[in-house]
Image (cartoon, rainbow, N blue to C red; front, side, top):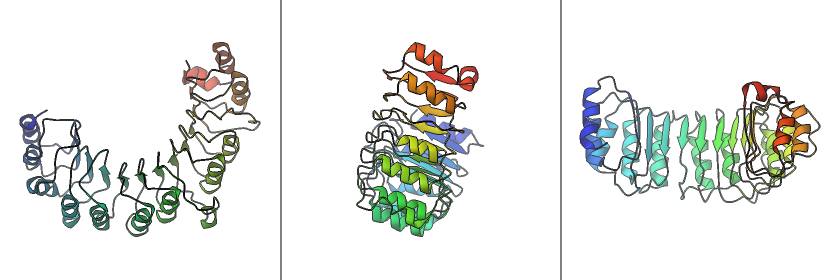
Length: 338
């Protein structure tokens, strides 16, 4: 797609309300600005270029963007923007409920994000992944002041964040049901009981913590005490997770989806209790053996999706044996092993 075809699209489709344009290297800032002026009723815009070196901070682009008075979803990726763009969105009071500054967005600072969130306090879904200047104190400030309606947040790959940011989010955002903090690099110096003393957080349903090498069995067991309604837990490539996961399964009675890919310390020994609600289990590249899996299957009969890629201890014969107990998986589900 180029500037001309984009202009044609916006000019001719009068009912257009949502547009997603990803990795379009031929669309320029001026071209997008010209197209936006033809569709002032647009409610959702998602846009990225092929490379993160195109500047989308010129005044003509900003003016066209803030003319979309009904815009509730804005996704920008691989763009050079500016604080002025964020200031302009804030001053115009666009009714954003979803705001994403994705991978390799650059040119802005914390001041721009702070001002936008201070004026756009109806945001339900916020994605600031790869925002390397964001630190724990920033998260405390934003969550305690402006994010009262937040439902989901993605702070993955923010290299200055620690688990203190996670604690701040659940304390300050009463509607927050999903947190993604993949690869946040470090653990705070706080005691592992620091979250427990603040109470229980039943609103959280989904927690993505993959690629956090500092995350231990002790930490995850503690999370189980304060997030009793968790339904999805992603611990992909958390290399310190091992047999403590059994205690997690005992405590997370509402858990439906568990990802333990590349958690090589996981063997699932000691599962001698019923896991009633688990439906999706990813054990790829763990050290689970088919004998253990067979015992586990007797206590977890609701599995609909089971992934066992790279599990050297699981044989084809063992998988066949396991399916005797996984009746839902056998009849209606999905099993993948290599």
